[in-house]
Image (cartoon, rainbow, N blue to C red; front, side, top):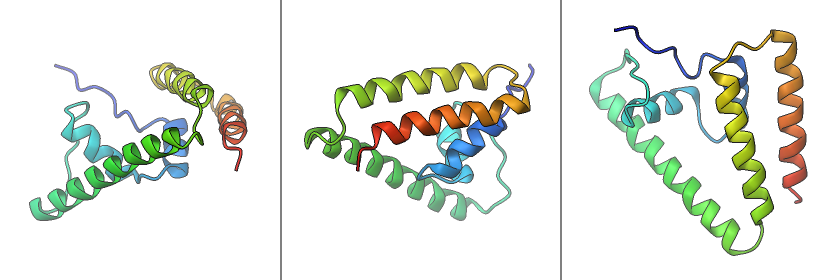
Length: 120
């Protein structure tokens, strides 16, 4: 059985990770824990499970943050729609070949949409 390609090998995904609250390692661990992609880690079992806990705590914090921001009206339904549509597009982009010259353009558009949604 052929192994699936690494989901964070795309330059666009790596650029988005750099702007996110997560590190590449944390994303790899989350993918691994959810059985979405298996990665071999060259760290001790104890260190791995400490990072699993840190990743889980960060993910829980993210969910609580979304609930809080949505509950206070800071994150409005239109923002959620933009995030959802961007996520769908990133999923499509990730599974296709993107010419390097287009990557910068794609990241610019994502950045513009995120900046518009963030009115603070």
